[in-house]
Length: 147
Image (tube, rainbow, N blue to C red; front, side, top):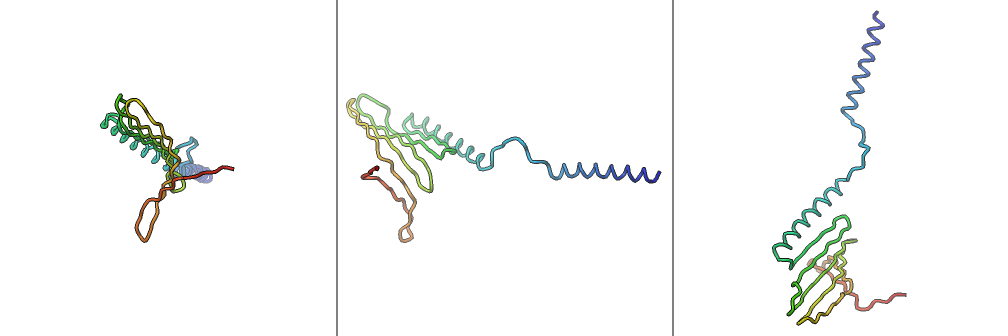
């Protein structure tokens, strides 16, 4: 009789230990979830796009911002709406990579219906320092050769 009581209490204690371990150390989730960095990137992208939407509305389609945090890109547009008298538009895509911003831009300017369309070369912007003063270095290609 004593042996049966000891065996039953040992099995009950082992079952209680399993429930305790399951509660204290849950298993790793099997579903694929976004990392904390991806969640923060998405949240900041949404905030930036809301700001861009409101700037677009407040400026009557004169200034626009769009962000893509996952691709590390931003689109900046500003200028007047096309009219019969004057046209002024600037449209750029900024790609952030390796600590620099690569800017590809298009510029349209016109008077009395005659519009000049300029595609500017890719400009690189880098943070820099000279004698303790911080600044920005612009790299504009003057001549580019391909072999």
